[in-house]
Length: 241
Image 1 (cartoon, one colour):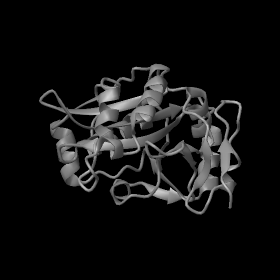
Image 2 (tube, helix red, strand yellow):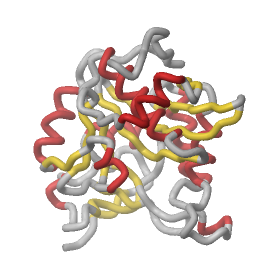
Image 3 (tube, helix red, strand yellow):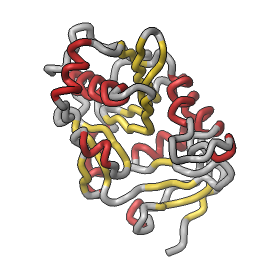
Image 4 (cartoon, helix red, strand yellow):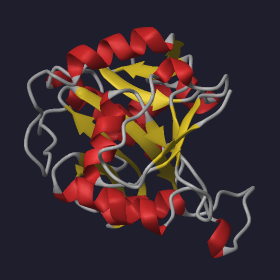
C-alpha cells in the first residue's frame, strides 16, 4: 500500500484513516502548524517521526485509551497520593516537561541528534499549541524540583496524551492519576494513549477498535470546551475520587 504524501500547506488533507498500513502509518509530509495538528488530532491522527526523517502521521488500529473513571491505582500508589509525596501542578512548566520527555531513556543513545522523536521542531510546534490553550502539561514536583510529568493536547472533551517521564519512582503515575481525576470531574471521559504499553495497561488503559475510537472523537471533540489555560487542580482532589 502506498503512503499519501501531503503538500507543505495546510490546505492538503489527510486521507481516510482506513488507508493506514497494518502498523498504523497513514501519511507523510505536510507541516506541524497548529491548524494541521488540531485537524489531525480530531481525526485520530498524530505525528511521530525522528529528527532527520519526513513528518510521519499515524492512526493505529487498535487504539490504546484510558477512560478517566477506570484509572487503576495500586495500594502503594494510593498511599503516595494521600501522603502528598509529590506536589502536582498543571501548565506551570510546559516546555520543561517536553524537554524532560525528550531526554534519552536508559536504552537509547546519548547523541543529541538521536534523542527521541520529541526534537526541536516538535517542541516548537507544541509550544505554539500550548500558547493557544490546546496543549497542557502536568508536573510532579519534589522539593521544588521537577521529577515527573506528562503533556498532551485537549480538544473539546477529549485529551490526547503524548508522552510522560519519571525521574523519581511513581511520579509519572501520580501525574496521570491526578490528570484522570481532574478530567473526570470536568466530564472528560477519555485519554488517548495511542499505542499499547505495559506501563499504561497496568494503569487501566486498554485497546479498542480504531472505528470505535473515531466514533468517540466525533462526539467529544465537538463538545463543550474545557476550562481556559492555564488549568488549575481542584483543591480537594484526592486519591479517593
